[in-house]
Image 1 (cartoon, rainbow, N blue to C red):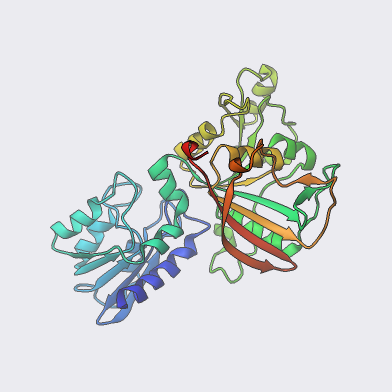
Image 2: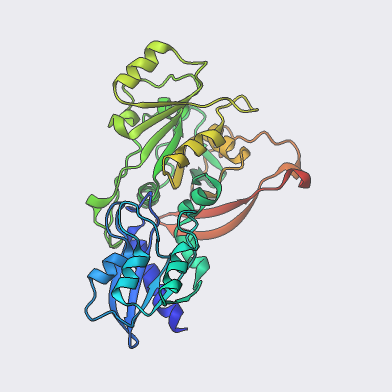
Length: 376
């Protein structure tokens, strides 16, 4: 029970980096001696000290003989910062209690082995499920080569996302829209479709109120803004393209006009090519793989029914976040997602994992339960 108590505090500290650490994982550390916490730290930003180093620097007493509680296995390799395992060994820590093993193949098990070799007692995993929940994107990128994908949708009670004309501002209230800003802030990239860009001309930037989140608003990074645009038809004046170094477009190389490509690239906008998949759409798995290769851990998809359905159909959605407003838009309004399903056996089943009332709206978080092909 004591281990859980101090690991819970380390998790609490780690959550302070929820908006700022990518592409690194969120990690917290607590150092305990004689039953008392003598040091705390968390990883705030890539390139800065890891949680263990920050905790050691914040120590209020000699840490020799103490126990360190870390939500993630201490790193053992030289990156932007020295190995945390070495720092703990040098400080004379007697025991390390870890939450989960690092999924990074450069680290996995090596940090723990280095500690044990140096005579440090290693205990764990402790509260592994909670520690994994803290870093879904980092874990998925390391284990599967793909980012963790959330699809955000807003709908009426009758399951409609926009009027027949495409008008959709605003279905939900201000509290729900601010909650979406928090989703954006914790994501390394926001993905939308060319249809949404043309219809709404969104900026897709983060405008977050961090009050009560123990996060400095100035530290919140703007996510990469990604447009799925098969024929590269995005208007050069679209808000989403600026600042240009934070925008990326995926398109089909065979569909583009060279002059338009050159104009966008001259502005410094990254244009990436992906092939079409079996459904004649851009290959979303390939596109997400490219983002993962760039260190993107978590992706938020904010788009219309077509692209949302394509992500679901591709089996890429890890979370479906739906804000339901107490409104009826009518039978002519647009549906939540477009999915090419004909039989009940093809239905995508959803596991409801969270429900919350936000203002006058209800937030529903689902995890899709994809079937294997042999089950269909």
